[in-house]
Image (tube, rainbow, N blue to C red):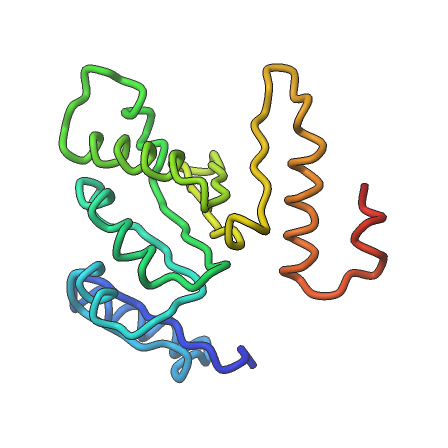
Length: 178
């Protein structure tokens, strides 16, 4: 039981879509997935939303233009996952000015300059960014990490409390976490 949620699988290639259907069908997940063959951001733009989670792995030069559409469709408290954010190290090579590398760089700038998000880079494979929208500004706090991490404890406390709220009632009081 998934609580009534639906997964939208969007891919540009019919054969890839068929392969996904076969695999998910074999696992018994037929009724949970709506399949789309087409351009991902245009498909998202045409869906009603809001969405709890968006996984973005489109052509990298399209990353910056995708963010406003994703932000409009993601519910408050929703999660954005973006793949290939380390881009095999190319983002660190100033000589690499290809459209895809510049797209990853620009999305990185966009993701790290918006205070309504919590952003984390997870350095697995080619790098994954996970972002979660924050509550409205009056209810949120922003912490900056200093060189020595003096603000780390309050930031970690907020993150732990967010995690506890996201997962449901904890076994112990949330205030006892720190």
